[in-house]
Length: 189
Image (tube, rainbow, N blue to C red):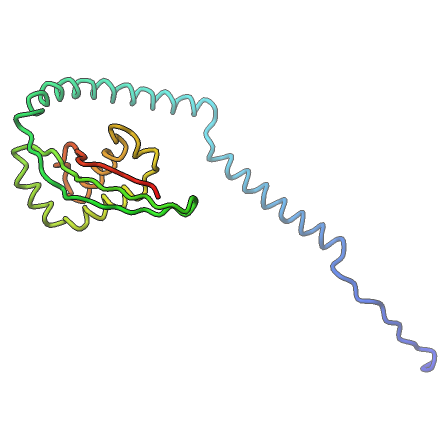
């Protein structure tokens, strides 16, 4: 009998069909559990309408209160336009920005001035001298990051707003009220 016992080897098989079905079933169960958990946190239609009504009421209240503030601000800022404002120099700038897409460079030259309240001029100058390098860097970064189309705007409104915001943030207080460009020129090469 020992002679008749032959060992028959079966070829090695990869993962079977049942293993694949089990993996798909496991992933499906996980996805269904996640969907069920997420659906518990999503507000219903009525809850969404309530939230929208509350937000609309809050916005309306904010607009009503801001209209009152604007009318009082308009009255208080009218005399500040000429008598109570001082012009301060923020330096002259030469900014070169390279555009990788077009392979050109943009040269921007300008002198920058700012308007501050006469009462706050000394405080502004103290804070400005303490952070001159940081403010110059922020102005250069802002100009370098603008599109050439923004530089063709006659009022340079977008650039002025960005510089005003970044300068006041660097100062730590909103002392600068307006930014004025002088001798502004740019060339693209």
